[in-house]
Length: 263
Length: 248
Image 1 (cartoon, rainbow over the protein chains, first blue to last red):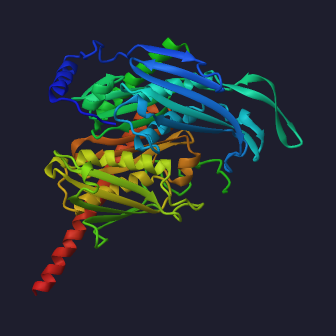
Image 2: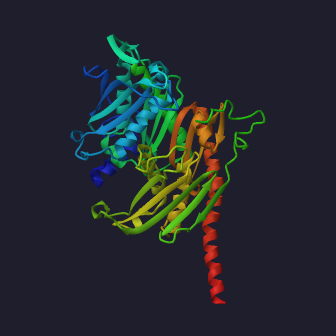
């Protein structure tokens, strides 16, 4: 996922952050402008497009019937997949998902799954045999940094926009009826990613900052403000003190975002 | 399927396997047990049985992946098909691919990568038996394999998890606690640098509980660190003794 960045630029970014400033004139704790558009793909049961600065992510949700997992026979199934499509960045290549897209999908998945955002019990059609399967497909359309937050935001926005087909069971067969019902949601997780550059924390790193930062910390928060998923990334480290500092900053930013999104 | 136990902690404050809330499972580590590898380690952490091997520094293959200014660290975390209850397909799962990445990133800060430009080191981790907390035990063993291979390091990396079961924050979750419990927080740590190199979490925790879990996991790491150092020393004590015998 990396591309080249000049040494001059690295120094410039580092020196600015030292002074609490950033190349794009944001403060260290500011998100880029966020735009959310729901229901952009009519053929999908739910969809949303998120613009986070120049980063653009489209999420489509498909709801189909399938078999439940044996250990949760009366729960619907959630599947999250992410595609770093080659048109989104000169560094993305076609082919099977690499570790970056798998990590992205699994972070988005964890935020939704662990916050119990989807009321999966209501997705059961016939226990042990037939349930609804919710496919969340994250499509990165333009990579300008912080794909995690953009994808997580788009995924939840798409789920809020998702309508399930009405159905009835006739002789063990599922018959789709007219009309739709809203996908039952219990929580709306908000995911916040922080980058660490020269031991300073920044919110929502964009592409060039991602190339300079040594590590990142992602935290997802549920409606009650509790943490429901965490992931450290990058080849650097955090001290014990920095983790607590990051946790407080992320919690504050998540509350801010939640207010802005009106979730 | 086993029936889910109702209570994970009994009235006396003991857990299903008889441990106290802040007690580690028994940890046994051996260093240098694979003759072909440049460095290797075997760890038994509770019922987890894990082998780790390091090959390198050596020429990168394929060559174009080499870096002009540093050594490239590669890592493969893999579970044996017989390591879990139901047979696991030997093909790498999405979970294994993610874990390979986070384990690599937890080790990278410890290695002086810039000492060996244009080379690579491969770490292979095979989970022979899994019982919760395999990523942590894998990191503990992999760091030793790197050290055993003679690769210069800033510190050993040691890992341990904490989590929440029955509203209590506990140390070092085993399989059932991990599956039935409320949250799991694996942490990798370099004690000499006070550096956390891996931090993940799933489940639901308040910020206070999260802070408590991270601190508890770090305390666990420090205990395993002592065992880790001892294991490394033991190998070289044995070599010394063998040489002395030969000299006589």
